[in-house]
Length: 50
Image 1 (tube, rainbow, N blue to C red):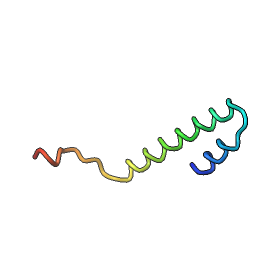
Image 2: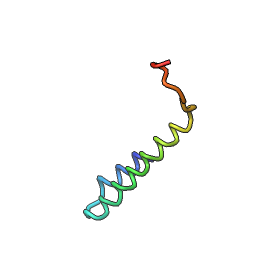
Image 3: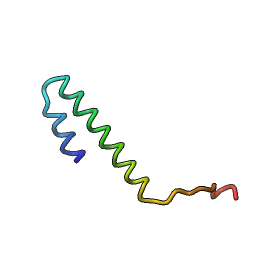
Image 4: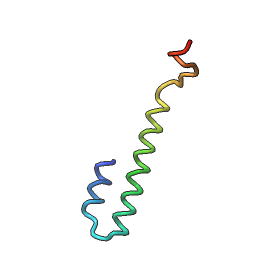
């Protein structure tokens, strides 16, 4: 998904269209990071300071 958005960004000629694809790419990165964090359990204690 991110590759397709990046390709569309580089092929765009208009500055406004490039800005739109740039925003969509960052939204996609945030979604991927959020899904990655949801996959793993949250650690509720500090492992270094028991």
